[in-house]
Length: 198
Image (cartoon, rainbow, N blue to C red; front, side, top):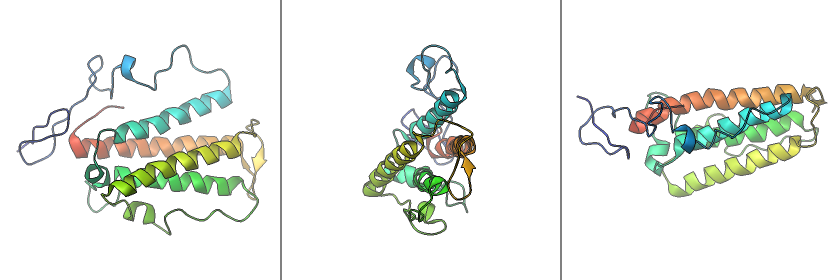
């Protein structure tokens, strides 16, 4: 039996939620172009560095959009057993990853992990408002810190840190990490309330 859901994710029968989107122009999109904050006016940026940063910004925004309108239980829900992955876990994981990327480019002692070893970022993603608030604050802080650490390195060929990682490699890896997890977020959100779209 298919559960019917409205645009708030409310349901009246058991089973998977019905697929839906708020978009009306393109039914496979998250939002209509006029309402999508990722659609910037004008053409694409000029140059490699601005282009990479533009893609990173859009993927970061996509992750946040996939979490919009959900309560702590929905954000922490693990809809695909036996996976420990949830939307809240992804937010915590990406905060942890942003912090770790600074270790790639630093010459000093590594910055300690935020949540602990191994899968603590996902395991600790529990349905509590304080955990949700802390996760989004952690993500914003860690993103800003990594951005600040790279702000003075505009030469994409410059190599940083003990492993001499190029700025280009780090930026491309950051985009890849967010893009991969935004794909996970697509599926996780659809499992939570049926909402679809890029």
